[in-house]
Length: 205
Image 1 (cartoon, rainbow, N blue to C red):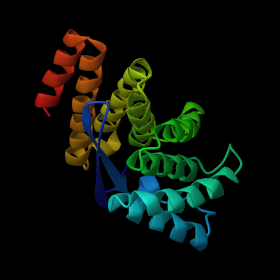
Image 2 (spheres, helix red, strand yellow; image 1 turned 180 degrees about the vertical axis):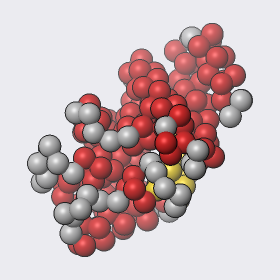
Image 3 (cartoon, rainbow, N blue to C red; image 1 turned 135 degrees about the vertical axis):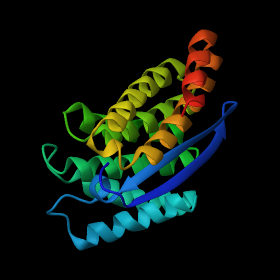
């Protein structure tokens, strides 16, 4: 994520004993559809994001599925920002609607875009974190732990990258939320030492 126009969407959910939050930081460069995207797609995408920001889960799922379906039509070698963003927001909508297994599947698609070498630190962070959330909600704590570890690495990369100075505040806030969620996952696994280290790291942000 780069440039300085930032909108934060705070996503709060509670399940499996977790009270967790994701701060999705959205900036113009990170979420702007690739150059060949139509105005119609952009309107659908904005509607999806608006419903997610309002926690209107029922409408968010419907709207974000439309965007995800449109993103599926693009060649996998093109439109990485568009496709990754569509899948992240659809997975987030599914989490809000407590459709966790479906969210994992959509999260897989977001991670697949990242795995091809596309996107930047913060975009990659969003893909791994949303899948980690969904995995935790499904009870796959080991898978969640692995995804959250990768998400945090990407967010550290974002903080240390070119955009890190301008967006240090939002990036730090996102990382802190994610670390505190990771603490809960690690505690549920029984890894108290790792949970303590993550908690200490979060307290310094």
